[in-house]
Length: 106
Image 1 (spheres, rainbow, N blue to C red):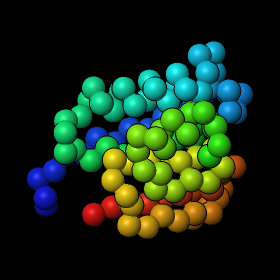
Image 2 (tube, rainbow, N blue to C red; image 1 turned 180 degrees about the vertical axis):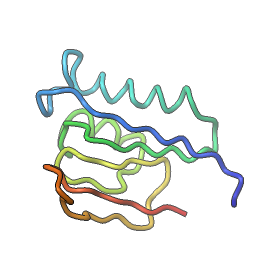
Image 3 (cartoon, one colour; image 1 turned 60 degrees about the horizontal axis):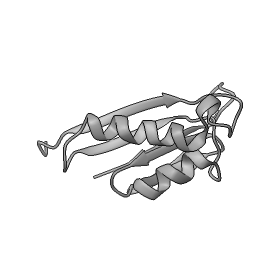
């Protein structure tokens, strides 16, 4: 064990897809980044996952991408982290209407 702390955040984004909900995509991304910042310390690994209901070109994901590394994404599902991932994969549906995605970190 490294002794490092990990903050793991899961988010299910607002609908309709790519709108960011009532406040918009940039506000949604900003709120997510603020939650990560307020609940972690310098040097902590921050991993953010979820069905963000926003694709790779959306304001939400673009804002997240300016502050975090996108480890893997598939349509509206994404994994972001405070460090680059070693690998990311699309795992298939497994019975869901979304593909499962994975990322590995060191």
